[in-house]
Image 1 (cartoon, rainbow over the protein chains, first blue to last red):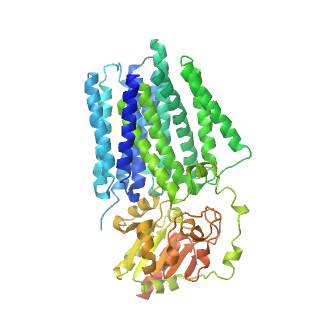
Image 2: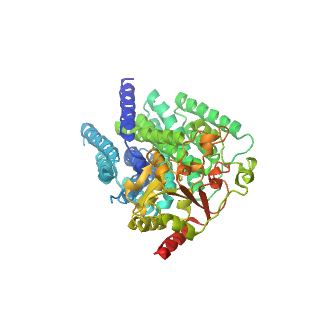
Length: 92
Length: 464
């Protein structure tokens, strides 16, 4: 239960930080915000690496492999395409 | 690497994610912000690889290489007009990863013979539910945006009832997963019903409501990652997931507000399904619509001191962003002030128009938000509407019974002259006629967006 309360605390406080930070993003950058946050949600790769690397059973290893693939598409695709977009926003 | 060191690395990575998102508060700092986020991710991945529990690296490396390659290919090949599809796909993959990781974690606990605790089982059920809804919902959104399936809302009799039954079944299966976690098959059945739920929830949503749906799925993909964080008791996943979840929620709110509709109305309203049943435009347009030519527009522009260009989804469809930029440069060279008025829901995702115009090298200072540009229309000589309809429909202000009543619009009708570039008088997504097209100060230029702007450029040059 203590672990849960600690995790819940982190969850709630992170949402507050998210609200504060994201509210300051101008509408011009909303598309890069979505693709960039997509890349960040690829953090599931951390859990995926553990499943693929600890290799408890063949099934979990396969599931781990697939989830590493999915999450890395998110990470690399997300950061890369965001960079491509942001590089286009220029001053006069 | 001892767990303490790994957790320190996660703390640094989390801080970098927050700095990264903070960087997006200004276009000038945004590129660096994105790089900080990427460095954070690299640190998190490397730290995880050094976990002592890992016994082999072949599978991990194979997954990293395959995923990176696919992601890189997608990112370099996608056109800017295809960005909504790309984001839809990425949302979906995030959801899928969460489903698989949570499933694997459930099996691992059972294999080791450890006790299932409540936090883990509840979070696993939620990961499966949210992740599968996100994955399939995103695939439907992708198919609609890519026009693999019809962009219209698909509604059929009993749809809401069916959705309700599937939703209840999913909730019941969540309870079963929590009560009997050792029966792993309940989890996979839950994933199946949640997948059906994700499909049912998105097929009923039409094209112009896509900005809301994509934002919502963006939020879900983050929440699924956070739920997976609770499964693994991993703070890194909880922090990053909730940041993304919060971001998606904010964007969803902004999009709903920009259409003056509630989220419930967008998700269950089925707007855009049956435009035929609505009022015909004949009474509104009869004898009042004035058609114009490129030459006449060129003469108007020659004497204009201030021009506002209002782009809509039609600009993206006809890929007219570069041509529009060329016209703006031509006018600016003659001393005319040119700015762009951007409605928050113009296009198919938040910020869609801004990205397209940025691709055409339009400086971001010229892209004006609705609240900023609206008070200036009275001092505007010519407003050029390209491929936008509902977001400039004055009925939103005047007719309380209209489906778009109360939706904030761009007040282009207050400009001295309005030029509307459009193929025909066909209604927009809301399926209603637009009195703007019949207004005294409106001229209609019936043509494809890109061709129209090219013709105007030629006519302006002709004037010398």
